Length: 70
Image (cartoon, rainbow, N blue to C red; front, side, top):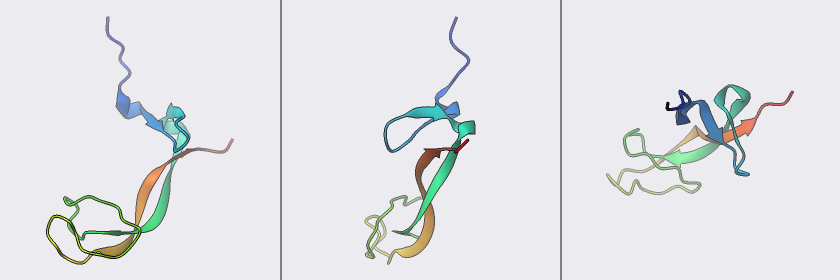
């Protein structure tokens, strides 16, 4: 019988450790993104969207996960 666990309950930290999502917190940083959320891409310098060519905007975005402190 197949496991009832799926990949949505697990996340990976920048160090490669895989943990349960419930034991993780989201890491956020300021980055440059297109204002169209469908044109997803995170850049750490200003510029233009590679899809539509519009100027990127500066925004706080999720960039990863870390294990919660005890």
